[in-house]
Structure formats: C-alpha cells, structure tokens
Amino acid sequence: MVSAAEILVLIGILTVVGAILSRAAKSLRKPVAFIAGSLIVVGTLFGGLAWAGVPAFIDIPGISPPVATGLWSVQFLATSSVDRTTSGENIVDGGHTIRYELTDANMDGLGDVNLDIRVINQNVGASTDVWPFEVVLTYVSTTTGATPAAQPIVNRTNTGSIDERAAVTYSLTESGSPTLTQLGERAVSNDWATGLSDQLNVDFEMSVVACDDIAVGTPGKLQFTVGGVLMTVELTESA
Image (cartoon, rainbow, N blue to C red):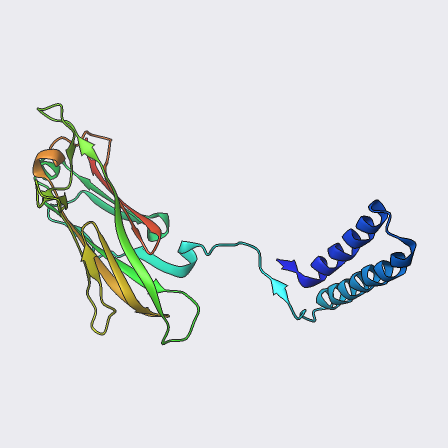
C-alpha cells in the first residue's frame, strides 16, 4: 500500500530540493519553504496517525491481483469414477489431483472418466452478488501406437468441422444451482452468487485406442482449470 502521507512527505521534500536546485529568487524562497514545510508536516501527521491505528483519509492501493485459489474452493469428490475396475483410486494435492491405477486389461478398455467436483464461491460480497466462473480444458496427453501419429487419450467430437474438440461435457448437478453454459472445451457461469456451493460434473469420453497404448509407469494425464484452480487426473497402468 502507498499512503497519502508518504506521498505528501515526498512532494514536500522534492519541492525543497527543486527550489535549491533551481536557485529560486529570494522573494520566492519563503513561500516555497512554507509550502514544502506544510506538506512535510501534514504528511508526517497523517503518517503518525496511521502508525497509531487511525486510518488516513486517502489510501492508494498498490497493484495486487486476487489469487484464484482464494476465490474458489475446488476439490475432487470420492464419487468420481471410471467405467473399468481400478486397482487404486486416490485424491491428493489438497483435492486437486485424482489418481487411478488400472491393470493392462482394464486400461485397454477404458471408455469413460466421470469426475465429481465440489465448488464453493469464496468471493467476499453480498449474497446477491454474482461472480463470473469458468471451467477450461488445458491439457490432454497423447500416446503413440501402431501409427507414429500422436493420439489424444480423449476422443474427438465434431471431427472435421470448425467445432472439432475434445469429447468432454460439463454440468452442474444440484437443484437451485447457478447456470452453466458449455462453449466447446470450456464452460462459463455468470450467475454464481457469493458463498454458493455446487457440484460440478466433468465427463470425458476416452479413446480406447489411445488408452490401450498408455505405458506402464507413465500416466495418461488430463488437466483443466475450475475457477482458476488447476485440476489433474492421472491414469496409470500397473505393472
């Protein structure tokens, strides 16, 4: 924070320095000294009041952008699932990463990853205030099989059109919830009220061909942001 007191003291000092450097006429020295002295005294007074806990009448904030993780609480839920039997399922990293372990046979047939996520609007404001909210797919890993071309582990939809995209669907699942509109690989809400909690569902249609080529020990990975918070899915084939 830069306070008004600090600004007044600085201006006073600069005025004195400027007068000295410019060799102001003798007739101007007293008025200049009076103005500079007044600025320094006033600035010092407000600085002392602020130090004592009395707020100044002006406070100029510095540039300090809000942190996304402080605005939205986002966590994977244990109700998340895949459509094949897993050897292990773990939610880690404060609820921001979910890891699935599958045998070779189950990974080869993986067709769906269905994720449940608890989202809470932690912005500060009245209960009637609404906040913009966005979900954005940011990363889909690829594998290489019989052909040298990289294959995304998520199927593509609207193939060959200008609307081609990853086959992912976003939805909010609780009654009385805000609305959510999907726009390709992202979804937005413009009516999410302060303090409101809802369950977000993110459903990926997986590519059986690409998942068949996930190597042992090298997870297939999906990443997306929810309210600015990075969420990660790791799909590991067990030895």
